Length: 310
Ligand code: PAF
Image (cartoon, rainbow, N blue to C red; front, side, top):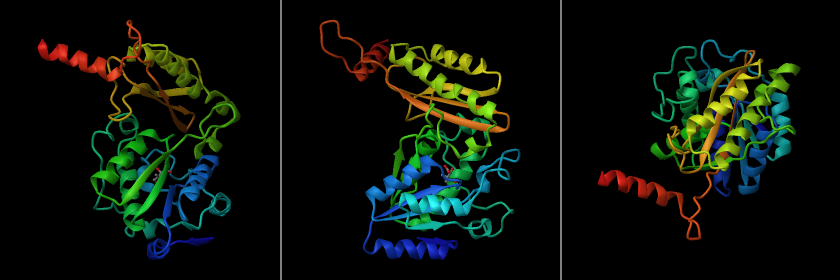
């Protein structure tokens, strides 16, 4: 397996591979864990050649965020990438990606609407940084299938939108969240949790499970679901809640009344470590009293008909 560090080597390696092979791309910020391993393995099972990128992107960190303390270990990443089935690792320096860094890049990619809610509110500029670096990687990579974790649910929605809006020849593939044995979502930041905070952080998954139980048992008031998740997280003294919410999985907006499946999302800080997680909740199909199921869409249609008729 080769490790390369320049944009031109990366472009030529992928152009060369594409002459006879399908190419999978796994963009990461390094400090690879089991979750990344599963993305690389999936890319490997669906493509003939797999490129992993390792780059801690300064544009997506705010001034008071953890850019300098974000864990880094390229040798370990290379080993994990190799064992998971990667063919090359592209690990550029900051100046290779942004030649005038720390001067601001004149060009910025910004995906409106989807970037303005949830983490976009708490971390201003974060998703512009993500969208800009991902657009650069897609532009370098060319025609590939690109693999991202569903743990970063909002990021995945933004990347899908950007790939489609800017017509990148990239198939964006979302992959299931990998969890540790007790349910904590795998994250490079988990290594920075103290033992007590590691234990406390489990409250995020518990809150998601509680929200899921409520929605799946027919609770259709999004405020009730949100409040239940919030109060569970607030009950953990080590957690500093950012948000706990339930949104439409496409628009990322909160429905007043839940009528279809929703995505539950949570974010909280444990000392200086900010963690996020999410879970899908399937809203039950309404029971048709005359027997047989009624589609949720039918209920929405019926409601809007009533509205139209006044
Ligand atoms: O999810 C990540 O690791 C990063 O946000 C990404 C997509 C590699 C962009 O830097």
